[in-house]
Length: 362
Image (cartoon, rainbow, N blue to C red; front, side, top):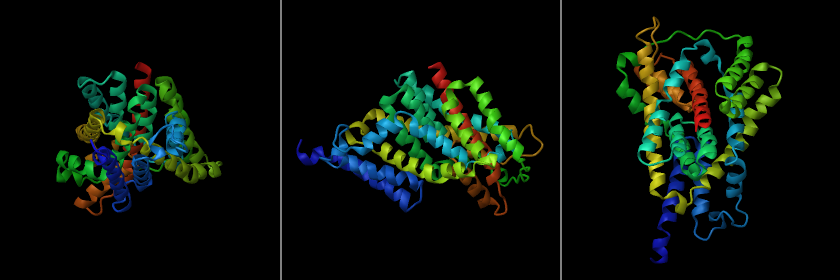
């Protein structure tokens, strides 16, 4: 094999990096993540680059991955920042949306079973299944603990599908709902008091801690960040977490994940299987959220727009925006975004709980 042929894998991965950058810049698909991931993929695949070697001089991307991402530091801190950015009011005002967030974990279970059937170990299968929750930090957190050897592939798959939410979810939603269902209007969510918003993160932390203690590194920090947001006396801390700190962590995360996309490690059959299973899991999770909402409509007086089931996955707030976009196509005056945020944040909690259950039992 001559030098040109040996470079083909690297050129493929450089092309993938360029595609990520294009998706981020031109099509605005999660640009804060896809642009740094894509650029780091280019860096580590340039032949002769020291960045392509873990022991390379000045290999900052490998250091970031090994010391901040693979040690679970960055994923947990991102949950803290996410809590400071999130309004749990829609979930508190309509607790039934917890059911939708739970049902959207269907893809996690389906991919877990399928991964074992095609030869992955239970630990690897759990790490692959959690991709169905469309939650990058949770995927990294779980894979680091259970199957670090596939961390690069699961992390890239999770964040890729998060960015492709506007492409993947609409066909599923359109196939599973009727025009009449997509036109369903929902009453404005009730106003949630400040006291409720303060009690909620404290109470949920205690409940989650007793039920699934292994989920506390994620859920605990998520709810701590939310308490800072809602308390009214820690505005400086919540603003820092919501803005500057989150931006720093996002840069580190993008560079670290992109740094795992070296051709030799990434272009394997195992990686392709993981990416395929992750896509199937994501589709199943979307379907699970929609179908449980349709089932709920058989028993409730005030009908729920099934499109908010799309938001049961953890891609906040992209999947909620997808639900709003599809609803407004049928009726421009139909506003379901705030209703969709309920299952959206419930999905974040549900995926973290699922990861905790995997950790406890596996």
